[in-house]
Each structure stands twice: as C-alpha cells, then as structure tokens.
Length: 124
Ligand code: HEC
Image 1 (cartoon, rainbow, N blue to C red):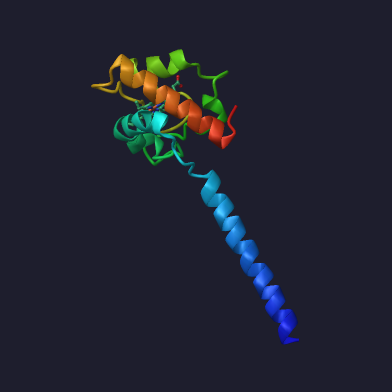
Image 2 (tube, rainbow, N blue to C red; image 1 turned 90 degrees about the horizontal axis):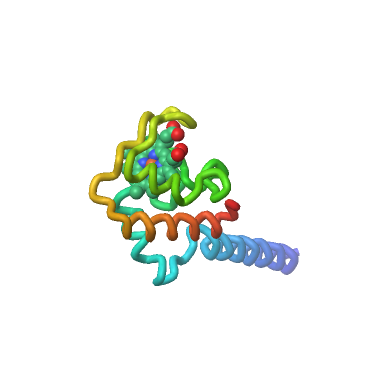
C-alpha cells in the first residue's frame, strides 16, 4: 500500500515538476542576445501600457493578440502608431499618444523584438 502511494506521489511530483519546467521554458521565453536591445527599448517605451511581455495592462491592450499579427498590423502600422499615436478604435483604453523620443532605429529594433515575441507565443 505504502509502496503504491509512494510510486503515485512520485509520479505526480515528477509530472508537476516537468510541466512547471516546460512552462518556464516556453513563456516568458529566454530572450537571445540579438533581441536584448529591442527588448530594453520596448520595456522602456511600451511596456507601461502593453505589458512587459506584450500581455497588456490597465493602460493598453496586449500586443500578443491576433489583431496585431503581421497580416493585420504590418510593421508600417507599428511605425505609424509609435510616431503619430493611435486613436482608440479596437479597445476602450483611450488613445495611444505618439511616443516621444523614439527614433527610427528604436522603432526597428522594437518591432523586431515584438515580432519575435509573437512568434514565440504562436501568433501568426
Ligand atoms: C500610454 C500608453 C501606451 C504606450 C506607452 C504605448 N501604447 Fe501602443 N497603444 C496604446 C493603446 C491604448 C492602444 C489601442 C488603441 C485602440 O483602441 O485601438 C495602442 C495601440 C497600439 C498599436 C496598434 C495600432 C493600430 O493601428 O491599431 C500598436 C502597433 C502599438 N500600440 C504599439 C506600441 C509600441 C511599439 C509602443 C512602444 C514604442 C507603444 N505602443 C506604446 C497605448 C500605449
């Protein structure tokens, strides 16, 4: 009896550990060095509203959302959003202001990071 219980709890424990590890492996993902700059700029300029991992906040929508996949919102629309701001139209968070201080280079590396993150999240 005890032996069975032990075997069962061992199995349960290893399942839990394994699924925990799997989860930690996949989300949030480990950011490769080549995306670190984009992530740093994203965190500084975007995460207060769109969340650290693009999961949204009470100030703005998640960018890890099918609305924002490549075929719905192109890189050019990201560029426009950052430079000109966005009038609220999909959500009820209010308008997105133009992001002061974002350069063309920042936009490029931020968009590259966001696309990478969307791929990791399986948003295609
Ligand atoms: C002050 C809050 C705030 C910040 C900071 C912010 N956003 Fe937004 N953003 C919003 C809100 C709110 C919307 C949703 C507007 C709507 O209702 O469709 C939005 C929408 C967008 C959209 C969709 C544009 C469209 O055409 O519909 C993109 C892309 C985007 N944000 C990217 C970014 C990026 C990249 C950054 C950082 C450089 C950023 N945002 C910073 C609040 C913010």
